[in-house]
Amino acid sequence: MQKGKEIKVYKTYLISVSLVLVFFLAAIFSGIVISVRTLIHEEILIQARAYFDQIVIARKWNAGYNGVYVEKAPGMVANPYLQDPDIRTTDGKVYTKKNPALMMREISEIAERKGLVKFRITSLRPVNPLNKPDDFEKESLELFQEGQRENFKKEMINNRTHFRYMGPLFIEKACLQCHGNQGYREGDIRGGISVSFDIQPIESRLRTNVIIVTVLGVCSILLLLGVVYFFTFKMIRKIAEIQKKVELMAITDELTGMFNRRHVMARFREEFEKAKRHGTDLGCIMIDVDNFKTINDTWGHLEGDRILKEVGKIIQRSVRVYDIPGRFGGEEFIIVLPGTGTDETQQLAERIRTSVRTQSMNGKTVTVSLGTTCLQSSDPDVDTIIKRADDNLYGAKKKGRDIVEST
Image (tube, rainbow, N blue to C red):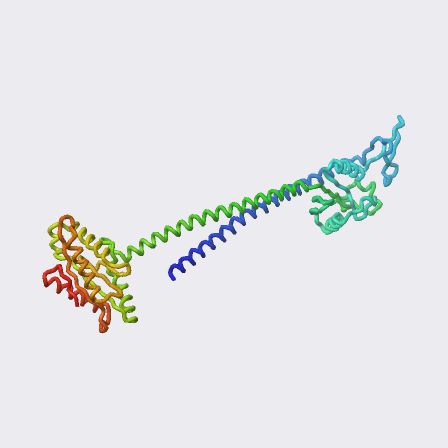
């Protein structure tokens, strides 16, 4: 039951740590992806604004001179929306006027052919039908009327991602030459300049970067979880080892390595209840090292301790795996014998007595006295059994020691 609780605690700990790490690292890498996306989007927007500003400046330059004249080459068509756009010089050459709108359109055509950028001037009330706004431009122009100063979006054109940007175009004094008859006044929003350029390579690189960051994030999470699991399991094993040592120390006599009195008594009570319940035998042997005070006084306490260890080893070698031997206190030992009757208890006691007497302990002969007894139907508790075995032990000492006394 205790083991199950420990496993549940460790599982809860590992799951909690794993979730925190996954959430934390996922948040970091998601933040990186979002940050990169935002940064690239801002760079694209800055680029679009730069295109727009360059167009506005070029247009303003043209408008400042009320249009510019260029030599009319063969096949060149004059702007049909201007009054008297052509002039002939004294040398017979013909020049045609390029107003801002026409100049912008022709520059846009050159830029578009080079795959750079496409831009156009458009209006809700265009003079030239070719300048009629598309859906994005119409939406932008309506927003400009409401006070918004720019509009942009991504749009798929010919299966490629384009960035579209549009800013308002205000009426200036030079604009009235062409648009005065439309009722515009200086400062009005006449229309806008639409900019469009291909961002498919940027989007492709961004997707690649997102995949790379995602893979790195997953690998980092798995690696970190692996490290956490490795050290956690290592810690669990270490805790289990320490816990086992602590549990062993709690039930072990420090000097002899046998069970200590507290553990023996706890087990004795368990076996007592079991024997009472099932009507089985239960034996008990009390053992005391003879003349132990003389041993300490003559050879010293260190030698006395060594003798106690040797006696303890003999006892442990003599019992069965399910018997319960332990140090009862001082030079006294106890053995609890589950399922053992009077004859078997006496026989074991006699073997232990003989083994101790016949084993030389650093050139010394040591003997023990033993008192044995077994569970009787009238015994109310283990203390009664222990007292009877202890009385037999002291009876053996009175009879001259190195004796097994039984009842």
